[in-house]
Length: 402
Ligand code: GLC
Image 1 (cartoon, rainbow, N blue to C red):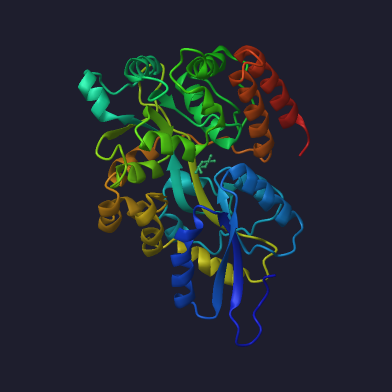
Image 2: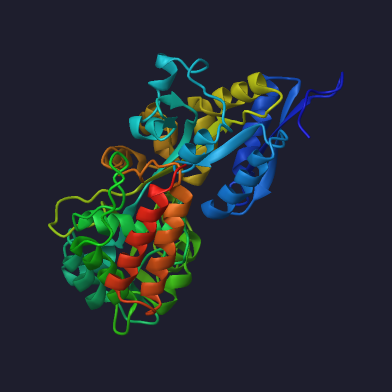
């Protein structure tokens, strides 16, 4: 696989993308083939959940066989892949001026121990969607605190036809993203990346997890099935009018507002709530591009990264999907704004996003948290027990020599 082409045949670059995004990558592969005759990008379809693609990518890069030239990676993957030496540093290829084109938080997610390994492609931040029509009809103001959210959700729901509040509750990375927003909204913390201090066994964390357990429990505002939901299950339910509130990412806005959606013209978006009512900080998400160190054609792979992150390419990918661009100029671009007017507002919300901790053992730390959150949601442990165990395991994990 990979390698330079035989004379007359184009060289092939290979990259793994989630199955649901592949159709939107094809136009970029086409425009690259035109801009750079003699090189072709081959897009392999991988699973949608980030955790699953992270393990696939890890095994492929571990073998250093050059299968993948390019890596399409989550904000949380950089530290591990860079620490293992599997990514090419891009500091020399992308100078100051080029880097300045990107949202600072998105760019920072590509830096590990002072070197740049990942160029941001699209960005994400956790948001609270709500049914503006239902709230207005009931004379309820858009909620700012967790208590207001719970009260409004309870008043406006009529389960099982319409639930109060949907979120990603399956045992995977999405649950961690949501839990962190509730945790930060309670003034709590998970892992301090500088000191490696773990905050999971503190009262703020217990209150945050208790909120999730209560929401999902008998008489709560979330369906019991929420513990099986990832992003798309929650979007489909919300979009068919079956929920009042939804915690999700920016891509939902355009899909929920388009023709044929049962909630088109009826939704609003808020920062995630907090205990105090101060605007909350959504989890920073997003995807970027890196070059595998084992690639036999790094120069061509870098050319693709550069091609995929021009404003023109951001239009090709973000306009039809509603994904949020990683470039700053994407938020003021008439073409992108015409396709998705929400971008104007989103640009501001992004600035307050909170990154997940940058530790090389991120995947394992997240797995520990996922398991214990799930145990509490399933009623197998109290929030306090679950978090005490998670804190213990996380400390042991972070204390191990790398
Ligand atoms: C989105 C985010 C990503 C996050 C994932 C969790 O894809 O961009 O950062 O890890 O959701 O499901």
